[in-house]
Structure formats: structure tokens, C-alpha cells
Image (cartoon, rainbow, N blue to C red; front, top):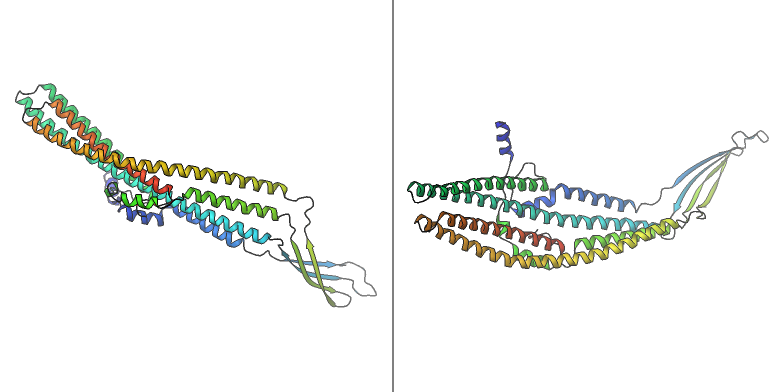
Length: 400
């Protein structure tokens, strides 16, 4: 057990800065590698759609057992090479459908990249916030121990009742439990971040500057884009399905086969050229069901596109509102934390001088912890809002 613990601690690493991790993840994250493979597959399909139809070779042997005429064989051997041709724009429709499918794959890849970057920003900021909360819990525990030592001194001097000592001990126990919970939350956040980026070893800590920097730049960049990736993907899907409608319509047009070959005559040991023309006649199957199905899918895609536009606009407006509100909330939280810090300093001085009761000091300390926690939560909420705004506008958050 001890060896495993030591090995795990050695393998664990500190996460790089958010900018570095974002750059590495956009190139190596498992989710993005999967989507890149889909793009390559779509590109291969698009290339394949440009291929011409293969020719066919026919060999026909006639009169193999026929009686000889005047002692001469009546056998005839015919060899024909037939090349089918797509007329009426069938090949062009197929090529266009392949290209539109590639457009869909590329649009989805871009959408996945932006969504991944937003999730990475949130995961990274969450891990940083959990670290801040863990540090806050440790600070609160240290302050609780200071209060306990002071309470013991006052009780020993006969200036406080034993009840105050029990209250201080309860405060220490509560702070210890809060610290353990904060450590567990930090570990969970770091594990989730490691899994998201496909890290070989779990991270032990992250840089905390993401919570306090780059915000104005992120706002300016996100507001410059008015096209959401979900809309671009829906538009590409609509165009691809419209192209498939044309493919289905072209199936009503027969393929024409032109053949050329040789016919060998057994009785003369001579040959003659053969030319043939073939075509499939769409009498019974005119692909009416396939055309109708393709049109209905295209209609559904139009509806999805309009829905995507409405949802993207609403998401953009909501995210922008959240960003603006988060600015005011953060300013208020920082001011509240500053006031709570000063109140605790004064309360501590008053308690040490015997002018402030332990109950009052504990209440002031609790208010300080709450104020610091509110600041952390507000900074994290602003990251959520900025990431949502960047994603709604088709931007990778925070300068990616």
C-alpha cells in the first residue's frame, strides 16, 4: 500500500497553465481526435464520390455443341467491354452530396472543438476554485485553532466559562470536516480535468490565474462573432440533405452502357467488331418513395436550422446578461470580503483584549469564511458565463 501511494504521488503531475493545456488538448484530446477521424472519413467519402463507374467485361460462347456445317464448327465467341455512363447530372449530384457531407463533418468538428474548449475552461476553473476553497478551509481551520488556544487561555484564567471552550472545540471540529470535504472536492475536480484532456497521470494542482485574468479580452473577442457553431452545423446538415434530394431524383434517370468488343467466328477463324448499347428502363421503380423520404428529411433539417437560430440567439443574450451581472456581483463580493477581513481583524484584537466575546468572534469568523467563499463562487460563475458567451458566438474561450 505504501509503495502504491508513493508511486501514485510520483506519477501525478502539476497541470500546465490554461493556455498551454488548451493548446495541447486541441491537438491531442481523445474527443477531438475522434472527431478529426470522422472528418478524414468524410473527406475520403467525398473523394470516392468523384470516381467514375467501373466498366464490365462480358464473354459469351455460342454453339458449343452445335452440329458442324460441312465439317466446319459453328462456334462463336463474343468478348465485350461495357462502360456505363451517368447522364442527366447523376454524377454531379453524387459529387455534390459527398462535398456537402464533408462540410457537415467539418462543421461538427468545429462545434465539438468550441464546446470542448468551453468545457475545458470550466473544468480548469472549477479545479482552481476547489483549490481556493481548500486553501480557505485550511485558513479557517488555522483561525479556529487560534480561537481555541485563546479560549483555553481565557478559561484557564477564569475569564471564560467552560462552555466557551466547548464552542471553540466544536468550531475546530467543524473546520476540520470542512477541510477534508474541500480536499475531496479538489481531488475530484482534478481527476475530471485529467480525464477530459486524456492526461496519462492525474494532476495534483492547477494554475489559479484563470479565475482572475483575461476577462475583458475574452468579452471583446466573443462579442465580435455573431454566428453560433450550432447554426453553422444545422445549415451544413440542411445543405447536405438537399443535395441528397437531388441524388434521389436523379435515380429516375437510367444509366447508359456503351459496349465494344470482338466476335470470333469458328468456321472462318475470323473476327468482327461488336458495338452495344444498354439502359435500365425505370418502369416499375421510379424511386418515388426515396425522393419523398429525402424531401421530408430536408424539411426537417430546415426546421432544425430555424430552431438552432432561435436557440443560439437566446443563448447569446442570456450569456451576455450573465457576464454583465457577474461583473457587478464580483465587485460586490470583493468589497464584502475586504470588509469581512477587516471585521475579523478588529474582532480578534477585541477578543484578545477581552472586549469581544467568543460568540461574537466565531460569528465574525464565519462571516469572513462566507465572504471569501462567495468571492470564489462568483469568480467561478463568471468563468461559466464567459465560456457560455464564447461558445454561443463560436469562439474558443480565453484567447484559444
